[in-house]
Image (cartoon, rainbow, N blue to C red; front, side, top):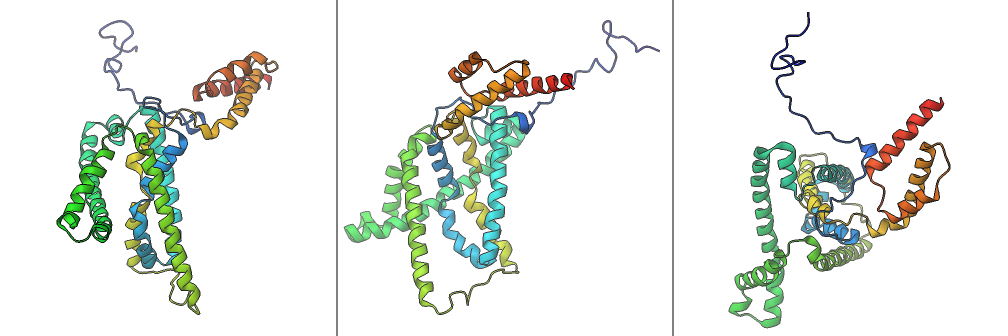
Length: 317
């Protein structure tokens, strides 16, 4: 028996209820992650510095305690494992940010998981970022107060509270006013140099102390198999996380990083050869010229050329 037709010819009861279409995600082999291009173009070096400052900040000050809890080998293992895991999650976030054209972490969650998940995530991020800002201001006051008191002497304007208010209002607040992270890239470079100098001084001092000891490895433990090992996990995770900032950095990243432009000619040549093979003919000069005058071939163009090449090979077989 044929299907009962309702509401018009050719429609069945099952087809009368519209189905919600699910988003289609391109497979990894046919997707090239690039910036969305909606925001201002920041250089790859600037974006790299911003991510490094986000991932390697004051969290490095807690890494010695993490190594004490996990052991020197356990600490290295945790850093390598967590770094690889977080690098993969950063790639996934960037890929879905490209698909949804999201401008921030919360907007991507809103587009992928709906408004309720976005509101819940917003509350979590608000608590996390507020606590982080309070901790950073406390560290800033602890560092600036001795300097101000040593240079200007003990006075009311060199007290810890006065130094904290001055730094928060006249230093931190103006840096928060720009709309893009690229606008404060100079501060990021300065902070990166500061971290490098601090790590270098600490390393030099520790090497000097270890050289005076007859057996510097005597008191070191490779693996600390106790509950303290798990105490090092959140320290290392927090010390290298930058997931809240990666989508904003990705949105501001220039479409074609300048540090990769020397490889542009090779990609153009490969795309031209693929198109020439798909058309059963030699590579035309016009193809190379048009590719050289255009931006880097998109993922859809390369995917179409690969599909045409696969069909040509099937017909030849």
